[in-house]
Length: 295
Image (tube, rainbow, N blue to C red):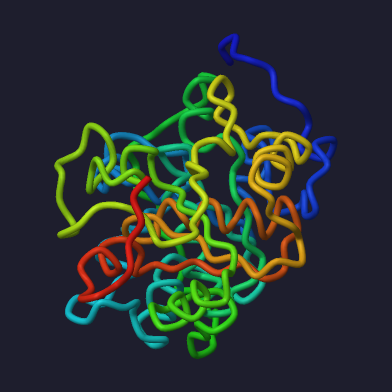
């Protein structure tokens, strides 16, 4: 039986540019057993899946599944294709991501999948926490599926991923930069999120010209779902001057929080020129002579 939780506005009524990219907990409950739907759980806490997950969901470990074990980069096309086939994903499978931390790592996995050109991707609005707060089932049984047949292309970074050299050029052109970290990180008072060990960079501060727009502002804290398009436009456009035609680069510490903002700007607000700088502050803050601002 579902619990009494804060009500949410229907996804289709929130004014998003691409409302079909989100699905509700009700949709997942109704479709989680469909043969052409695959639920993928991706969490910051890589052990959380084993404690309980949505029935039928399989795990994506952002550390071991998506990242090359030696080079600071993502896995090869061949490795990625084997991973998806091992999860029972076919060419026509609809993939629904969800996870902890208000879908922070779910949007990261979504972004990596897009680098390889995978289509039919969706996000469970409200993520794992919304599902659990509604009293819906969590199980420890790990499902097994027949080998999938999906074929993925070679990874194409250029449309969605920014590297340091491009960010440097962006700064020179006074391009729009969004620092999605905590205000303390932006101000250079911390090198990591509050309540985490202070590590990852030699110096603190932010990339010159970057706006401070913490990623979590895009989420309603009562429902864990994305704010309406009108609320998001107030945050990103009215308060911070971003516009849909702008070329925007988002960054955080290692690119995970900024993938959430990339998702919001690209899919919910319809911006066409947004990239995620996954090198982020661990690269910029450790780079010799990289310019840094502090308030």
